[in-house]
Amino acid sequence: MEDTLRFLVQHRYSVLLAVVFTEQVGLPLPAAPFLLAAGALARAGTMDLPISLALVAVTALIVDLLWYEIGRRRGSRILRWLCRISLEPDSCVRRTEQVFARHGLRSLLFAKFVPGLSMAAPPMSGMLHFGLGRFLLFDALGAVIWGGLFIALGYALSDQLELVAESLERLGGLLGVIAAAGFGAILCWKYLKRRRMVRALHIARITPEELKQKIDSGESPVVFDLRHPIDLRANPVTIPTASHLPMEELDRRYAEIPRDREVILFCSCPNEASSASIAFQLRRKGIDNVRPLAGGLDAWRGREFPVVPASQLITDSRSG
Image (cartoon, rainbow, N blue to C red; front, side, top):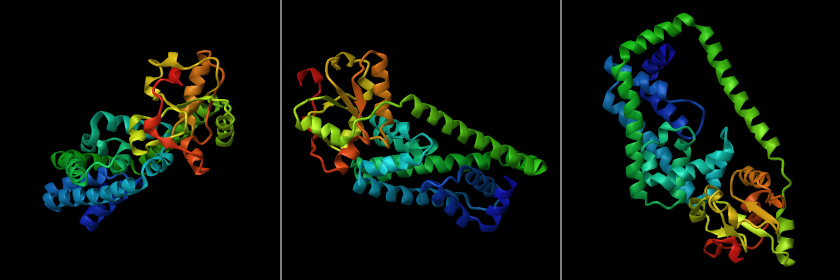
């Protein structure tokens, strides 16, 4: 904290702008310590409180507006790309869709406090074609709440922050080593967890070419589109003959899955790990002839295979 305060004193508002911009574009530089420091410096009279808050809110809003426009133009592809670079890409897309399904644009009021959601919420808003005016209103309020809370905490706890800074200075490089080791341990744990999951889900896939050949030859495998309704709304096409079975409804609609036909699963996650996970669950329940589609819907469309409007999705596989 001492270094942060010193750096802010030297460069003030330009540093605050750069740090907020860097975090909002997705780079791993947390802005919270600088916002706390800005609040402490505002109490000391070194920085202006309203100017600091306005700078933080406007900078975040400009970056979010850029992400909103990218999401509006590029659709779900940009969200999947953002989640692909996260530590947990397989749950990132689904988690963001679930939050928006529950809260809509109100998600923007708290998104900046939630790792992953902070960067994914603005493009999701554009992807779902929420009106620009409503987006700007909720996003601006969210930016003010986020920046204002940390700056206010720094202002109110400036004396305590100074004590913390003095303690950190006495610890010196030891604290940096401990922090780096802790961060490294978290990264290793996440990586190993993901590797274990991938090995556990080592289930034979079916390629888009194989699936198309089966459909063309009249074999009629049962194809399930596992996407969340939010994703269907943003990307309203699907594979011909597919039935809609959101992952959240698997337990309730388990009886719809046939035992005497081949079952193909697909989604539009950064990879097909989500559909592989469902395939793994079904195999444990005795449905053995089930395979995920390698590459999911993106791979199917990437080969320019035919798609149909999502409105043609069958809602009950037993009707097919």
